[in-house]
Amino acid sequence: MIHELNNPVVKTLINHLRDIRIDALRFRHIVHNLSHHLVYEALKKETLSFKEIDTWQGKHNFGFIKEEKLLFVTILRAGLPMIEAVTDIFPAAESGFLAMKRDEKTHQSVLYYDRVPKSCEGRTVIIVDPMVATGGSLCDAIALMKTRSPERIITLNLIGAPEGLDIVMQKHPDIELYIAQIDERLNADKFILPGLGDAGDRSYNTPA
Ligand code: PRP
Image (cartoon, rainbow, N blue to C red; front, side, top):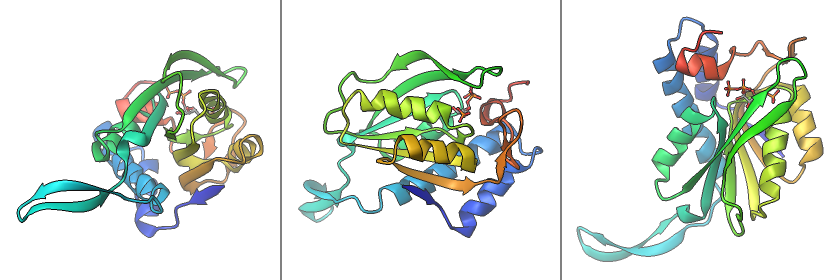
């Protein structure tokens, strides 16, 4: 199921990202903020497990999300600021990394690095990737993660095109996809319109 965040703060932040005068530091800072919004929304129904902690008034039980159960997976490189942001909130969660490059001629994604646990049984896998254009990278990442048998898969995305999101949902109707903004469409080069350009390049000031 797709959950588009419908929050004016989120829309304001997304629209700042569209402004090409935003430098890389501010771009990543906004990506951090949006990633926090997305993970709050995605985990808003999590049950808390109680554990004893030492407080200023002695030992007491309080509820916490079981972060050891969470496995954040990102697709290099544009997803790096997102995984930094979510693991800031859950430092005991594990992280996995996939590298996929979209072939700019065929528009197919190619996996060239896989540093994700071989078994993810019992885990909540949360894939973070800012853009869903054709949906190819996200579909491939979800398919790969399914081979590792997690309990469930959630994705956090900043911006997507309806064409790519439809494909992700057709191929993987069982996942929960949280996205800050669904834009209008893809152009002939499979870029999101109006979009924000290439999130990886903008995050790290990489010349096109
Ligand atoms: C971007 C983005 C997604 C992918 C989306 O990565 O981070 O992974 O494109 O496109 P798709 O839906 O058509 O697959 P890119 O290949 O530009 O690499 P980068 O992270 O190094 O910028």
